[in-house]
Image (cartoon, rainbow, N blue to C red):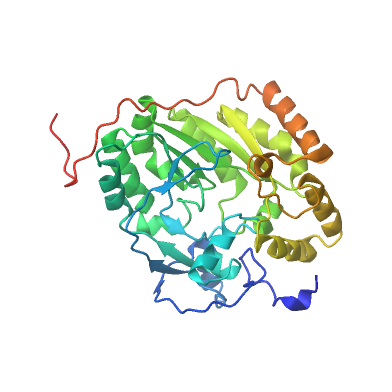
Length: 362
């Protein structure tokens, strides 16, 4: 792949560029680009790319899932796009639905859903609603930097806490600790489990692979804080990228187990649609010495392709390399006492919330 296909990397961003031009100009509002933008201001340099957030007003908030290899049937995504900028993010292609690029647009032109909590209240309050766990963080991170101002995740938690509705959270951010006052009482009732994604422990790799996500030490600290509060906590070592972060599998699991995680899982690198060329260019820039090897192993795991979209296979991989990673992970998890029991959530405590948002006396 020729580097001339892309401009220079934007400092502090994950993607090398926009993979395709957008066809529409959406009305937007400025939002804080979090610590990297603040650092640029303090240092006296001009921020090359600011985060822009557009308020989105959907008519519903619960997304239904029928994929047989995903362990939930309902999810909520308070935001579209993710400022964390993880180059490998499988959700990047969803930005194309807005005629925006899965590249830099995905991590800098974001959408927030300020009516999410109200919609959630209405939808779980409808007759016939089945209170199976609602998953947060399945597409983009609900605790990404803009949650600090928008607080949409917090508002959704308040609705679910009122209704005793079960939920799961997957996040890369220690910002989840802000909501322990809501999560701990829910955990005491068996209503919530939190998965913290830890992709590596190496801070140098973190800076280029997940440039605006909290550093690994903060994520381990988040696991410790959640576990100390009695919240069932899972560590998700994902994605595992051959010859990039696979050497840290055992170290990540040990750090997470020592912090209090009870269960663990992994997923091999997925490169759907526009993610594949973005990731390959990232490799050419940061790891030109091993780019060919990485993609060769990825393709061996994906039966000769950059990506395997088939159910079950996409989450597990195939072939000797996938088997080797799976064996290493299983042995390490067993030695550390992980996965001895599954996190089980209750659904029998659910009480439909009041449509007017007022608390009941009894």
